[in-house]
Length: 157
Image (cartoon, rainbow, N blue to C red; front, side, top):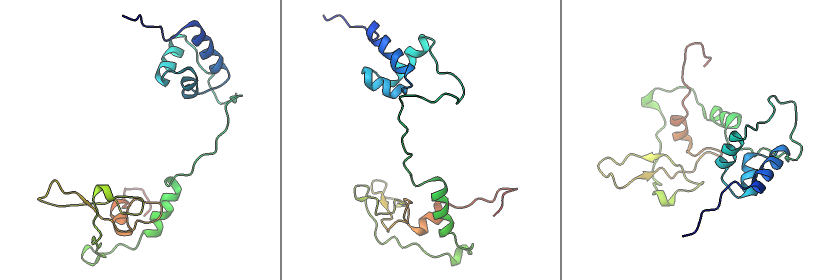
């Protein structure tokens, strides 16, 4: 039977403190040492080590990374506002053509991901499959359904 080796040796603890003092994140420290991020956070907690509060000091060694723009937030709101049409009575609403139904395995970024109700056939789940609006997972018709603006009191419409 092999005796388990301790996770936190003196060398690892010294490296942990050194990397932490240099401003590395817990994820970066974990990758460097070869343990999980939670192990690093737990050990720092047991050692009563913490970063100074406030945003005054910048991390010296940590590189500043540009934020990757994801479709969401303001961009997604702009897309939805462009799709918004004046409210129509439900009977006059434009029908959504689901002629291009596809299975889960056929879904891609070029297909609408709106699930189609297949009542009675629980094993067969189909998705719309139409061309989605740029930046959204749904076609224009399903995006209008999915992203309805709510009318809350005190909120402009």
